[in-house]
Length: 280
Image (cartoon, rainbow, N blue to C red):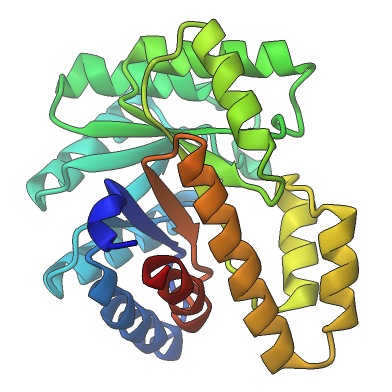
């Protein structure tokens, strides 16, 4: 397989908090550049300081020649502050955004301007037209707060109808989840590209913690295999790379035109599975 077989490849980072983390992130961005990604996306948590961290990281990466784009969340912002932020990203040449509901800080309760991501998508389209290509999140294994699969699909349809161009999934390890999710989306009239997100496997305990936080399921068979290799980091990483590469092969066979990688700001786990995938 060649990189040309992937019509889309992107990598997700989170903003660094220290000079050392910044140097590590730039090193990771440089190493992953060999795969010619469409973009590096930068996450955004709750609160104003998190927003500035995202903006600073996107600006820094772009200054180093990388196509970095921001995650945008509604938080407790006013319409005016959101429009101002969009203008700042337009000024530095950003062409894409990942639009999410995001987390809400405790200090913003009672001051929330946007209750759902589709409202933020609508605002961006109203204020900026088609200036940005908008990516939204979706959940093959259902959002942890959703009442049902049907309701979850309805929420995604609202985002697409509001003007989203592309959908990026939460990561998952059950390959059957993706084609079933595609079928549900198509039946609901969602025709936009749906790119699967994947998580490289490098650290067993961190994978469990992250998965519990975001509601991603680790299948029992995989949990047992990873646990048996927990105390052998080299074996764990090699097995994890093989698992994720095989997952991507299956996803592409089931119609995925590309992948989005949750890197956790690490280069080697991503390089390992992509080397297996692209060499096959």
